[in-house]
Length: 123
Image (cartoon, rainbow, N blue to C red; front, side, top):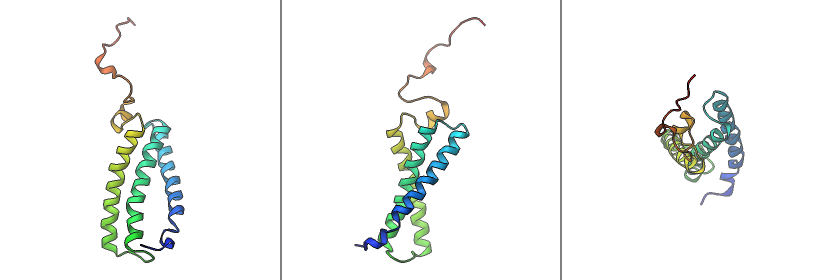
């Protein structure tokens, strides 16, 4: 088991990632990619799972020292993929909006308007 000192900077890294995730969510919301709340849920889920998928294994495998370059590159790549897949999946469970319906402006809990006929009021 690695010493507790190997995890001493983890809280700081979590705080940095939280701020970075929030900035991404705000930017997405301002660009019209969905409401801020939904963007925040997706951004935080993806970012934290990616952080934990890379940082915790790194600290467990190489406590107190710099990891070798190639294994760290492989770990980072796998962590980013896990962060995206796991984060989107978790956010879809937490949220009422999926990435597909977010771009269409539909909530998953609402009935789709595609099956209803269009109103026929004269202009």
